[in-house]
Length: 145
Image 1 (cartoon, helix red, strand yellow):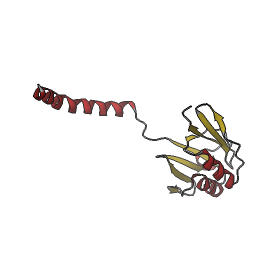
Image 2 (cartoon, rainbow, N blue to C red; image 1 turned 120 degrees about the horizontal axis):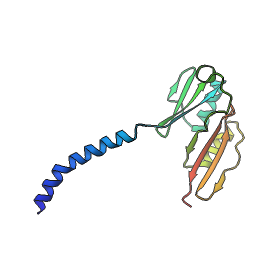
Image 3 (cartoon, helix red, strand yellow; image 1 turned 30 degrees about the vertical axis):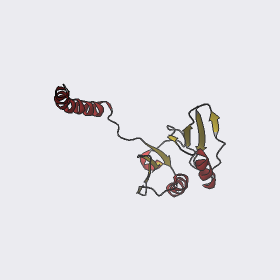
Image 4 (cartoon, rainbow, N blue to C red; image 1 turned 90 degrees about the horizontal axis):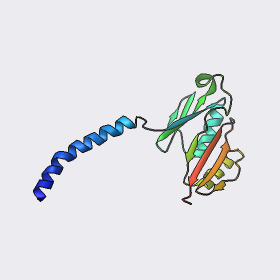
């Protein structure tokens, strides 16, 4: 009986694994999340986000600067080149999960923006800051409550 089960698993398991792998690729074409915010001041924005994320950018071009954040890109781009006609703070709001909102609050304040207090709701805490370009960015931490 053990031999029968072993032979059956040996025959079926590779097919099941290939089917699962193909299914995952077919239903999940997105590999990573990214966001960008337009700016009129690339140098000032780069300095702000260096301080906020506490790291150097992974890509540093004159009109495109990207930070590797949790396996995705958070970029700042020249408004003139990549988002002409857009108004500051008028796009989607980047929403990033954080392990420590207090650290981000301190970094944002040290980088020169006024950061309101952390909002504490059951199950989730939120930190909403506005970058020097007027772009709202939200950070959240799940509390398990």
